[in-house]
Length: 208
Image (cartoon, rainbow, N blue to C red):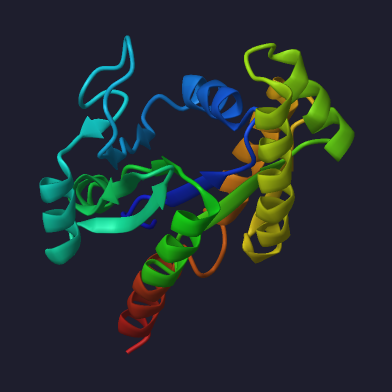
């Protein structure tokens, strides 16, 4: 079977619950590695370097870009974010699946660099439900919610460029959808091409 892990890229608009869905999936699949992103922003209260993010200076971040050390990178609200390449590649080579939870811009960069990556976009059951979830948080003012909804509309346009869509009606159901997608992806001829080549070679050798 394929000895290389699967690179899973997970995206969705703010408030859709992608982080919660991913946590539910990872509980069932603890052997899957979660990729920790690098950022130039300052740590928030309770955040731990290397666990939540790798907190880097702008100089170190730029050096990673120059040395092709990032799978993807983007800038939001004046801060840079990116996915360190080395740890991802090491896990994939060991046969460990790796999950990236990143924005659309970065996801499409990963798809360009890693055509075998599996892109999954999380959608709300409806736009009205997304609005309800954002306002229900009670942590953001009306203008922030309006801005997030506007961004969500643009992000959902890009969902057509992803491989699969997960609709988050409930966390449990969405995590099950993700599990089925990963299972299906691991049974494609594309993913199992090395295994097919091995069996084909054995067949040719046996019949000589």
